[in-house]
Image (cartoon, rainbow, N blue to C red; front, top):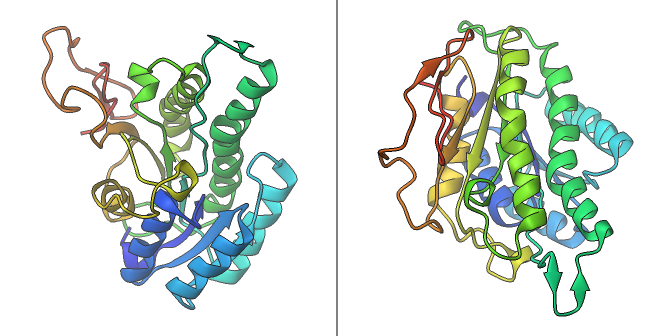
Length: 266
């Protein structure tokens, strides 16, 4: 699947990582629909990206809103073969802090945005992609989810965040196995720190991770996996470790490395 043929939905696409992915898709000749809750940022992003982009105000935690926005995006772009889930929050809070214990509603909200929001987009996008005519390689589309190194090495104050991103990691392999027969690949990326306007930093400052995320449609991989990128961890993501268990191969052809950092396909 060539990136210039991409018709992509990017959640959280009005700023930060999502906007950087959208820029890459448009620069390569693809089309993109930006899903975001921020009206002004969405309008500004579309103005910057040009006629190949459209903006859809969407709360990714609302199932009917996501379904309606996916349908609208398909109509606008004339199809869909890539969905990149970048919408998320990184709110820190200790489980037991000076102000008392973490409210259950705080934990629930982080899970709703980061985990359930990712699922809602992926299921609607996958259902649409299953209607695509496969290309010469048998591909109908790709799903890219954003986890975090916190899923494997969470820090103090990241109980809710790490749980949400660990859930994204946990969905990857069963989702890939389910969709493999439909020609839909599933990839999860576990980045380190990424500058983002919603996190108090300038939008689109991280080039290394968005370039890898945007390059996924051009790769021909039959299955799905998790790729650790970025630099907030103390160790190199792809470094060999003595305690890494041996590789094993699953029935769907993906060689799995069960370790702290990656669950990738050969």
